[in-house]
Length: 129
Image 1 (cartoon, rainbow, N blue to C red):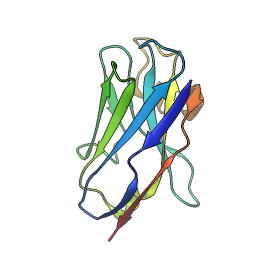
Image 2 (cartoon, rainbow, N blue to C red; image 1 turned 60 degrees about the vertical axis):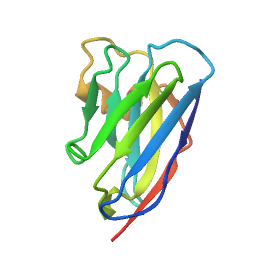
Image 3 (tube, one colour; image 1 turned 180 degrees about the horizontal axis):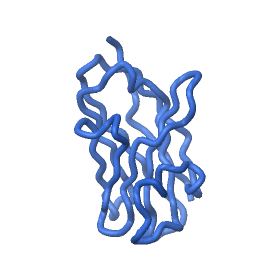
């Protein structure tokens, strides 16, 4: 499985970006797709996940109300729409795939980066003040 993240860039505070993560390789739809980010000098942190079952999405508290997740199973692509961006959103954003989650797996399960089986290369998001 290969994951290709794209859509990053430089944007002013208050602006928007949409990140995409395209999955190739093994087919099938039972992949829950997560997003993480890592700012310089900081640990990687959970941003959100959209699950394979029913498209249930969980977001980190820091981005709730500003970011949304969606997926297009026909294109094997997930999207992270980021609105009202803040300078503190500046980071490298990574998408990741989890194949082991079940219907009862909740946000805490997916917030753990070790639950993910495949990772993309990351895309830089820079928000200027």
